Amino acid sequence: MSELSERSGVAVPTIKYYQRENLLHAGEFSSPTQARYDDTHVDRLRLIRALIDIGGLSVASAREVIAAIDDTSLPLTWTFGVAQRAISTSVASVDSPSTGRGADDVAAALDEASIAIHSDNPGLPLASRVLDSYYELGHDELVGVLPDYLRAAVIVANADLDAVGRQAGRSDMAQTVVVGTVLGDSLFAGLRRIAQEYVSRQRFPDPDDSERQTKDES
Amino acid sequence: MSELSERSGVAVPTIKYYQRENLLHAGEFSSPTQARYDDTHVDRLRLIRALIDIGGLSVASAREVIAAIDDTSLPLTWTFGVAQRAISTSVASVDSPSTGRGADDVAAALDEASIAIHSDNPGLPLASRVLDSYYELGHDELVGVLPDYLRAAVIVANADLDAVGRQAGRSDMAQTVVVGTVLGDSLFAGLRRIAQEYVSRQRFPDPDDSERQTKDES
Image 1 (cartoon, each protein chain N blue to C red):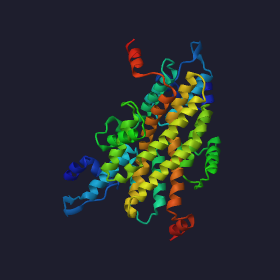
Image 2: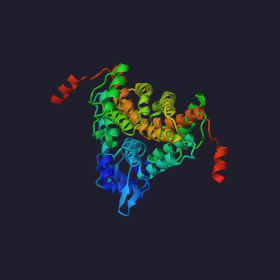
Image 3: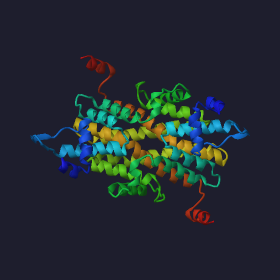
Image 4: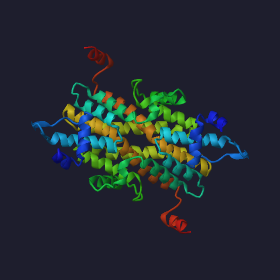
Protein backbone atom coordinates (compact mmCIF):
# COMPACT_ATOMS: atom_id res chain seq x y z
CA MET A 1 0.00 0.00 0.00
CA SER A 2 2.93 2.37 0.61
CA GLU A 3 3.95 1.80 -3.00
CA LEU A 4 0.41 2.60 -4.14
CA SER A 5 0.56 5.76 -2.02
CA GLU A 6 3.81 6.76 -3.67
CA ARG A 7 2.59 6.10 -7.19
CA SER A 8 -0.73 7.91 -6.74
CA GLY A 9 0.41 10.72 -4.44
CA VAL A 10 -2.41 9.89 -2.02
CA ALA A 11 -1.49 9.34 1.66
CA VAL A 12 -1.89 5.82 3.10
CA PRO A 13 -4.54 6.79 5.73
CA THR A 14 -6.56 8.44 2.95
CA ILE A 15 -6.31 5.31 0.80
CA LYS A 16 -7.51 3.22 3.75
CA TYR A 17 -10.37 5.66 4.26
CA TYR A 18 -11.42 5.39 0.60
CA GLN A 19 -11.40 1.60 0.92
CA ARG A 20 -13.58 1.68 4.04
CA GLU A 21 -15.95 4.04 2.22
CA ASN A 22 -16.10 1.65 -0.77
CA LEU A 23 -14.62 4.16 -3.19
CA LEU A 24 -11.58 2.00 -3.93
CA HIS A 25 -11.63 -1.72 -4.61
CA ALA A 26 -9.49 -4.00 -2.43
CA GLY A 27 -6.11 -5.27 -3.54
CA GLU A 28 -5.40 -8.93 -4.18
CA PHE A 29 -4.04 -10.52 -1.02
CA SER A 30 -0.75 -12.28 -1.65
CA SER A 31 -0.29 -12.96 2.08
CA PRO A 32 -2.40 -12.13 5.17
CA THR A 33 -0.56 -8.80 5.59
CA GLN A 34 0.36 -8.04 1.99
CA ALA A 35 -1.99 -6.91 -0.75
CA ARG A 36 -1.15 -6.43 -4.41
CA TYR A 37 -2.29 -3.23 -6.11
CA ASP A 38 -2.15 -2.53 -9.83
CA ASP A 39 -2.76 0.26 -12.34
CA THR A 40 -6.52 0.06 -11.81
CA HIS A 41 -5.97 1.22 -8.22
CA VAL A 42 -3.72 4.11 -9.27
CA ASP A 43 -6.24 5.18 -11.93
CA ARG A 44 -9.12 4.95 -9.51
CA LEU A 45 -7.31 7.02 -6.88
CA ARG A 46 -6.60 9.75 -9.46
CA LEU A 47 -10.27 9.76 -10.44
CA ILE A 48 -11.41 10.00 -6.81
CA ARG A 49 -9.07 12.92 -6.14
CA ALA A 50 -10.20 14.79 -9.27
CA LEU A 51 -13.90 14.33 -8.42
CA ILE A 52 -13.40 15.51 -4.84
CA ASP A 53 -10.65 18.15 -5.21
CA ILE A 54 -11.50 19.74 -8.55
CA GLY A 55 -15.16 18.74 -8.92
CA GLY A 56 -15.98 19.56 -5.29
CA LEU A 57 -17.94 16.32 -4.75
CA SER A 58 -18.52 14.92 -1.28
CA VAL A 59 -17.18 11.43 -0.55
CA ALA A 60 -20.74 10.11 -0.66
CA SER A 61 -21.39 11.69 -4.08
CA ALA A 62 -18.06 10.43 -5.42
CA ARG A 63 -19.01 6.89 -4.31
CA GLU A 64 -22.30 7.18 -6.18
CA VAL A 65 -20.79 8.25 -9.49
CA ILE A 66 -18.03 5.65 -9.22
CA ALA A 67 -20.65 2.97 -8.68
CA ALA A 68 -22.40 4.27 -11.79
CA ILE A 69 -19.19 3.90 -13.82
CA ASP A 70 -18.75 0.33 -12.56
CA ASP A 71 -22.36 -0.71 -13.10
CA THR A 72 -22.18 -2.05 -16.64
CA SER A 73 -25.92 -2.71 -16.71
CA LEU A 74 -26.63 1.02 -16.46
CA PRO A 75 -27.47 2.64 -19.82
CA LEU A 76 -25.22 5.55 -20.71
CA THR A 77 -27.96 8.19 -20.63
CA TRP A 78 -28.59 7.30 -16.99
CA THR A 79 -24.92 7.77 -16.15
CA PHE A 80 -25.44 11.44 -17.05
CA GLY A 81 -28.30 11.59 -14.59
CA VAL A 82 -26.26 10.05 -11.79
CA ALA A 83 -23.35 12.42 -12.40
CA GLN A 84 -25.68 15.42 -12.60
CA ARG A 85 -27.44 14.50 -9.38
CA ALA A 86 -24.13 13.99 -7.59
CA ILE A 87 -23.04 17.55 -8.37
CA SER A 88 -26.45 19.02 -7.66
CA THR A 89 -26.54 17.74 -4.09
CA SER A 90 -23.73 20.15 -3.27
CA VAL A 91 -26.11 23.01 -4.12
CA ALA A 92 -28.44 23.46 -1.18
CA SER A 93 -31.18 25.08 -3.19
CA VAL A 94 -32.08 21.97 -5.12
CA ASP A 95 -33.94 20.51 -2.18
CA SER A 96 -36.52 23.26 -2.30
CA PRO A 97 -38.38 23.16 -5.62
CA SER A 98 -39.06 26.45 -7.33
CA THR A 99 -42.62 27.59 -6.83
CA GLY A 100 -42.16 30.99 -8.37
CA ARG A 101 -41.90 32.52 -11.79
CA GLY A 102 -38.48 30.97 -12.41
CA ALA A 103 -39.92 27.55 -13.25
CA ASP A 104 -42.36 29.13 -15.72
CA ASP A 105 -39.56 31.06 -17.38
CA VAL A 106 -37.44 27.93 -17.80
CA ALA A 107 -40.43 26.01 -19.20
CA ALA A 108 -41.13 28.83 -21.66
CA ALA A 109 -37.49 29.01 -22.79
CA LEU A 110 -37.35 25.23 -23.32
CA ASP A 111 -40.62 25.36 -25.24
CA GLU A 112 -39.31 28.18 -27.43
CA ALA A 113 -36.18 26.14 -28.20
CA SER A 114 -38.23 22.93 -28.76
CA ILE A 115 -36.32 21.14 -26.00
CA ALA A 116 -38.26 18.37 -24.26
CA ILE A 117 -36.86 16.75 -21.11
CA HIS A 118 -38.05 14.73 -18.13
CA SER A 119 -39.65 16.66 -15.30
CA ASP A 120 -37.13 15.15 -12.84
CA ASN A 121 -34.06 16.57 -14.58
CA PRO A 122 -31.92 18.01 -11.75
CA GLY A 123 -31.16 21.09 -13.85
CA LEU A 124 -34.78 22.28 -13.71
CA PRO A 125 -34.97 23.17 -9.99
CA LEU A 126 -31.39 24.49 -10.08
CA ALA A 127 -32.03 26.92 -12.95
CA SER A 128 -35.49 27.84 -11.66
CA ARG A 129 -34.26 28.68 -8.17
CA VAL A 130 -31.60 31.04 -9.55
CA LEU A 131 -34.24 32.87 -11.62
CA ASP A 132 -36.48 33.06 -8.54
CA SER A 133 -33.57 34.70 -6.74
CA TYR A 134 -33.11 37.23 -9.54
CA TYR A 135 -36.77 38.24 -9.12
CA GLU A 136 -36.57 38.25 -5.31
CA LEU A 137 -33.51 40.48 -5.45
CA GLY A 138 -35.25 42.87 -7.83
CA HIS A 139 -32.85 41.95 -10.65
CA ASP A 140 -35.43 41.16 -13.31
CA GLU A 141 -32.98 42.37 -15.95
CA LEU A 142 -30.88 39.25 -15.31
CA VAL A 143 -33.74 36.94 -16.28
CA GLY A 144 -33.24 38.14 -19.84
CA VAL A 145 -30.02 36.12 -20.12
CA LEU A 146 -32.01 32.87 -20.24
CA PRO A 147 -32.31 32.29 -24.03
CA ASP A 148 -28.62 33.04 -24.63
CA TYR A 149 -27.54 30.87 -21.69
CA LEU A 150 -29.67 28.01 -23.02
CA ARG A 151 -28.18 28.36 -26.50
CA ALA A 152 -24.68 28.26 -24.98
CA ALA A 153 -25.64 25.24 -22.83
CA VAL A 154 -26.67 23.29 -25.93
CA ILE A 155 -23.28 24.08 -27.53
CA VAL A 156 -21.53 22.82 -24.37
CA ALA A 157 -23.70 19.68 -24.18
CA ASN A 158 -22.94 18.86 -27.81
CA ALA A 159 -19.21 19.21 -27.07
CA ASP A 160 -19.71 16.91 -24.04
CA LEU A 161 -21.38 14.25 -26.17
CA ASP A 162 -18.74 14.65 -28.90
CA ALA A 163 -16.12 13.74 -26.28
CA VAL A 164 -18.14 10.71 -25.18
CA GLY A 165 -18.40 9.66 -28.83
CA ARG A 166 -14.60 9.68 -29.12
CA GLN A 167 -14.45 6.81 -26.63
CA ALA A 168 -15.04 3.16 -27.46
CA GLY A 169 -16.62 0.79 -24.98
CA ARG A 170 -19.23 1.42 -22.36
CA SER A 171 -16.89 1.68 -19.36
CA ASP A 172 -14.66 4.36 -20.92
CA MET A 173 -17.70 6.24 -22.19
CA ALA A 174 -19.30 6.18 -18.75
CA GLN A 175 -16.14 7.52 -17.17
CA THR A 176 -15.98 10.33 -19.77
CA VAL A 177 -19.58 11.20 -18.90
CA VAL A 178 -18.80 11.41 -15.19
CA VAL A 179 -15.47 13.25 -15.45
CA GLY A 180 -16.72 15.63 -18.13
CA THR A 181 -19.93 16.43 -16.30
CA VAL A 182 -18.39 16.94 -12.86
CA LEU A 183 -15.23 18.79 -13.91
CA GLY A 184 -16.79 20.50 -16.93
CA ASP A 185 -18.73 22.92 -14.71
CA SER A 186 -15.42 24.25 -13.36
CA LEU A 187 -13.91 24.41 -16.83
CA PHE A 188 -16.82 26.43 -18.13
CA ALA A 189 -16.83 28.68 -15.05
CA GLY A 190 -13.16 29.45 -15.70
CA LEU A 191 -13.78 30.25 -19.36
CA ARG A 192 -16.76 32.42 -18.44
CA ARG A 193 -14.49 34.56 -16.23
CA ILE A 194 -12.08 34.91 -19.13
CA ALA A 195 -14.88 35.83 -21.54
CA GLN A 196 -16.36 38.32 -19.06
CA GLU A 197 -13.11 40.23 -18.90
CA TYR A 198 -12.77 40.15 -22.68
CA VAL A 199 -16.33 41.35 -23.36
CA SER A 200 -16.41 43.88 -20.52
CA ARG A 201 -13.20 45.51 -21.74
CA GLN A 202 -14.74 45.83 -25.18
CA ARG A 203 -17.91 47.43 -23.85
CA PHE A 204 -16.65 49.46 -20.92
CA PRO A 205 -13.18 50.59 -21.97
CA ASP A 206 -12.49 52.19 -18.64
CA PRO A 207 -9.49 51.70 -16.41
CA ASP A 208 -6.20 50.38 -17.61
CA ASP A 209 -3.32 49.28 -15.46
CA SER A 210 -1.58 52.64 -15.40
CA GLU A 211 -4.71 54.33 -14.06
CA ARG A 212 -5.04 51.74 -11.34
CA GLN A 213 -1.40 52.22 -10.46
CA THR A 214 -1.99 55.96 -10.09
CA LYS A 215 -5.04 55.40 -7.92
CA ASP A 216 -3.24 52.95 -5.66
CA GLU A 217 -0.39 55.37 -5.13
CA SER A 218 -2.51 58.43 -4.37
CA MET B 1 -34.86 43.87 14.55
CA SER B 2 -37.62 41.30 15.03
CA GLU B 3 -39.63 43.17 12.38
CA LEU B 4 -36.62 43.11 10.04
CA SER B 5 -36.31 39.37 10.71
CA GLU B 6 -39.97 38.88 9.82
CA ARG B 7 -39.80 40.94 6.63
CA SER B 8 -36.60 39.32 5.38
CA GLY B 9 -37.17 35.78 6.60
CA VAL B 10 -33.72 35.77 8.23
CA ALA B 11 -33.50 34.78 11.92
CA VAL B 12 -32.48 37.47 14.45
CA PRO B 13 -29.24 35.73 15.57
CA THR B 14 -28.23 35.43 11.91
CA ILE B 15 -28.91 39.14 11.33
CA LYS B 16 -26.76 39.98 14.37
CA TYR B 17 -24.03 37.73 13.03
CA TYR B 18 -24.09 39.49 9.64
CA GLN B 19 -23.81 42.85 11.39
CA ARG B 20 -20.83 41.70 13.45
CA GLU B 21 -19.22 40.40 10.25
CA ASN B 22 -19.81 43.77 8.52
CA LEU B 23 -22.09 42.31 5.88
CA LEU B 24 -25.08 44.38 6.96
CA HIS B 25 -25.03 48.09 7.81
CA ALA B 26 -26.30 49.17 11.23
CA GLY B 27 -29.79 50.53 11.76
CA GLU B 28 -30.45 54.09 12.84
CA PHE B 29 -30.75 54.20 16.62
CA SER B 30 -33.98 55.85 17.71
CA SER B 31 -33.30 54.99 21.39
CA PRO B 32 -30.43 53.17 23.12
CA THR B 33 -32.24 49.83 22.75
CA GLN B 34 -34.21 50.48 19.56
CA ALA B 35 -32.82 50.68 16.03
CA ARG B 36 -34.72 51.61 12.90
CA TYR B 37 -34.29 49.42 9.83
CA ASP B 38 -35.55 50.22 6.35
CA ASP B 39 -35.87 48.68 2.89
CA THR B 40 -32.12 48.91 2.32
CA HIS B 41 -31.65 46.41 5.16
CA VAL B 42 -34.26 44.02 3.77
CA ASP B 43 -32.73 44.24 0.29
CA ARG B 44 -29.24 43.70 1.64
CA LEU B 45 -30.31 40.65 3.68
CA ARG B 46 -31.91 39.09 0.57
CA LEU B 47 -28.70 39.71 -1.37
CA ILE B 48 -26.55 38.15 1.38
CA ARG B 49 -28.75 35.04 1.49
CA ALA B 50 -28.70 34.63 -2.28
CA LEU B 51 -24.91 34.96 -2.45
CA ILE B 52 -24.40 32.45 0.36
CA ASP B 53 -27.27 29.98 -0.18
CA ILE B 54 -27.55 29.89 -3.97
CA GLY B 55 -24.12 31.18 -4.96
CA GLY B 56 -22.30 29.09 -2.35
CA LEU B 57 -20.07 31.96 -1.20
CA SER B 58 -18.43 31.94 2.20
CA VAL B 59 -19.29 34.78 4.58
CA ALA B 60 -15.85 36.28 3.95
CA SER B 61 -16.32 36.18 0.18
CA ALA B 62 -19.83 37.65 0.46
CA ARG B 63 -18.40 40.52 2.52
CA GLU B 64 -15.82 41.20 -0.19
CA VAL B 65 -18.29 41.39 -3.06
CA ILE B 66 -20.71 43.51 -1.02
CA ALA B 67 -17.87 45.94 -0.25
CA ALA B 68 -17.20 46.06 -4.01
CA ILE B 69 -20.84 46.98 -4.68
CA ASP B 70 -20.70 49.75 -2.08
CA ASP B 71 -17.34 51.15 -3.19
CA THR B 72 -18.48 53.74 -5.73
CA SER B 73 -14.89 54.60 -6.63
CA LEU B 74 -14.34 51.12 -8.06
CA PRO B 75 -14.61 50.98 -11.88
CA LEU B 76 -17.19 48.50 -13.12
CA THR B 77 -14.73 46.20 -14.88
CA TRP B 78 -12.99 45.66 -11.54
CA THR B 79 -16.28 44.69 -9.91
CA PHE B 80 -16.27 41.70 -12.25
CA GLY B 81 -12.82 40.79 -11.02
CA VAL B 82 -13.84 40.98 -7.37
CA ALA B 83 -16.95 38.86 -7.98
CA GLN B 84 -14.96 36.33 -9.97
CA ARG B 85 -12.26 36.02 -7.35
CA ALA B 86 -14.87 35.59 -4.61
CA ILE B 87 -16.34 32.56 -6.36
CA SER B 88 -12.99 31.15 -7.30
CA THR B 89 -11.77 30.94 -3.70
CA SER B 90 -14.35 28.22 -3.09
CA VAL B 91 -12.49 26.06 -5.61
CA ALA B 92 -9.42 24.66 -3.91
CA SER B 93 -7.52 24.10 -7.13
CA VAL B 94 -7.06 27.78 -7.86
CA ASP B 95 -4.31 28.08 -5.27
CA SER B 96 -2.07 25.75 -7.21
CA PRO B 97 -1.27 27.23 -10.62
CA SER B 98 -1.32 24.92 -13.59
CA THR B 99 2.14 23.90 -14.64
CA GLY B 100 1.06 21.34 -17.16
CA ARG B 101 -0.29 21.25 -20.67
CA GLY B 102 -3.64 22.73 -19.59
CA ALA B 103 -2.30 26.28 -19.43
CA ASP B 104 -0.79 25.93 -22.92
CA ASP B 105 -4.08 24.61 -24.29
CA VAL B 106 -6.03 27.54 -22.82
CA ALA B 107 -3.48 30.03 -24.19
CA ALA B 108 -3.70 28.44 -27.65
CA ALA B 109 -7.52 28.48 -27.61
CA LEU B 110 -7.58 32.17 -26.59
CA ASP B 111 -5.04 32.98 -29.27
CA GLU B 112 -7.10 31.16 -31.87
CA ALA B 113 -10.20 33.14 -30.84
CA SER B 114 -8.21 36.44 -30.70
CA ILE B 115 -9.11 36.90 -27.03
CA ALA B 116 -6.57 38.90 -25.01
CA ILE B 117 -6.88 39.09 -21.22
CA HIS B 118 -4.74 39.86 -18.20
CA SER B 119 -2.51 37.08 -16.94
CA ASP B 120 -4.10 37.38 -13.46
CA ASN B 121 -7.63 36.55 -14.64
CA PRO B 122 -8.90 33.98 -12.09
CA GLY B 123 -10.45 31.92 -14.88
CA LEU B 124 -7.03 31.00 -16.28
CA PRO B 125 -5.80 28.75 -13.44
CA LEU B 126 -9.31 27.34 -12.97
CA ALA B 127 -9.71 26.25 -16.60
CA SER B 128 -6.07 25.12 -16.86
CA ARG B 129 -6.27 22.92 -13.77
CA VAL B 130 -9.36 21.13 -15.10
CA LEU B 131 -7.57 20.41 -18.39
CA ASP B 132 -4.53 19.16 -16.43
CA SER B 133 -6.88 16.79 -14.64
CA TYR B 134 -8.30 15.51 -17.91
CA TYR B 135 -4.76 14.63 -19.00
CA GLU B 136 -3.81 13.14 -15.62
CA LEU B 137 -6.91 10.95 -15.70
CA GLY B 138 -6.10 9.79 -19.23
CA HIS B 139 -9.16 11.57 -20.62
CA ASP B 140 -7.43 13.50 -23.40
CA GLU B 141 -10.63 13.25 -25.46
CA LEU B 142 -12.25 15.75 -23.07
CA VAL B 143 -9.66 18.44 -23.87
CA GLY B 144 -11.26 18.68 -27.32
CA VAL B 145 -14.30 20.45 -25.82
CA LEU B 146 -12.24 23.61 -25.25
CA PRO B 147 -13.02 25.63 -28.44
CA ASP B 148 -16.77 24.96 -28.16
CA TYR B 149 -16.80 25.75 -24.43
CA LEU B 150 -14.99 29.01 -25.12
CA ARG B 151 -17.46 29.95 -27.86
CA ALA B 152 -20.34 29.25 -25.46
CA ALA B 153 -18.61 31.25 -22.70
CA VAL B 154 -18.42 34.30 -24.96
CA ILE B 155 -22.18 34.00 -25.66
CA VAL B 156 -22.84 33.82 -21.91
CA ALA B 157 -20.52 36.76 -21.17
CA ASN B 158 -22.26 38.88 -23.80
CA ALA B 159 -25.62 38.06 -22.18
CA ASP B 160 -24.11 39.02 -18.80
CA LEU B 161 -22.99 42.39 -20.13
CA ASP B 162 -26.33 42.93 -21.88
CA ALA B 163 -28.01 42.59 -18.47
CA VAL B 164 -25.57 45.08 -16.94
CA GLY B 165 -26.34 47.47 -19.79
CA ARG B 166 -30.05 47.33 -18.95
CA GLN B 167 -29.27 49.01 -15.62
CA ALA B 168 -28.75 52.71 -15.09
CA GLY B 169 -26.37 54.02 -12.46
CA ARG B 170 -23.15 52.59 -11.17
CA SER B 171 -24.52 51.04 -7.97
CA ASP B 172 -27.26 49.05 -9.75
CA MET B 173 -24.84 48.00 -12.47
CA ALA B 174 -22.29 46.82 -9.89
CA GLN B 175 -24.95 44.77 -8.11
CA THR B 176 -26.02 43.21 -11.42
CA VAL B 177 -22.39 42.28 -12.06
CA VAL B 178 -22.05 40.60 -8.67
CA VAL B 179 -25.40 38.81 -8.62
CA GLY B 180 -25.16 37.74 -12.26
CA THR B 181 -21.59 36.49 -11.91
CA VAL B 182 -22.08 34.59 -8.65
CA LEU B 183 -25.51 33.09 -9.35
CA GLY B 184 -25.02 32.79 -13.10
CA ASP B 185 -22.66 29.83 -12.67
CA SER B 186 -25.51 27.88 -11.03
CA LEU B 187 -27.99 28.97 -13.69
CA PHE B 188 -25.70 27.80 -16.46
CA ALA B 189 -24.92 24.54 -14.62
CA GLY B 190 -28.67 23.86 -14.41
CA LEU B 191 -29.20 24.57 -18.10
CA ARG B 192 -26.21 22.40 -19.01
CA ARG B 193 -27.86 19.44 -17.24
CA ILE B 194 -31.05 20.09 -19.20
CA ALA B 195 -29.14 20.35 -22.49
CA GLN B 196 -27.13 17.18 -21.71
CA GLU B 197 -30.32 15.16 -21.35
CA TYR B 198 -31.74 16.68 -24.53
CA VAL B 199 -28.61 16.06 -26.63
CA SER B 200 -27.86 12.63 -25.15
CA ARG B 201 -31.38 11.41 -25.90
CA GLN B 202 -30.94 12.55 -29.49
CA ARG B 203 -27.62 10.75 -29.87
CA PHE B 204 -28.08 7.65 -27.74
CA PRO B 205 -31.77 6.83 -28.08
CA ASP B 206 -31.59 3.99 -25.60
CA PRO B 207 -33.77 3.46 -22.56
CA ASP B 208 -37.17 4.96 -22.10
CA ASP B 209 -39.17 5.08 -18.91
CA SER B 210 -41.05 1.86 -19.54
CA GLU B 211 -37.77 -0.07 -19.90
CA ARG B 212 -36.50 1.37 -16.64
CA GLN B 213 -39.78 0.44 -14.98
CA THR B 214 -39.36 -3.14 -16.18
CA LYS B 215 -35.77 -3.26 -14.94
CA ASP B 216 -36.70 -1.89 -11.52
CA GLU B 217 -39.46 -4.46 -11.12
CA SER B 218 -37.44 -7.48 -12.22
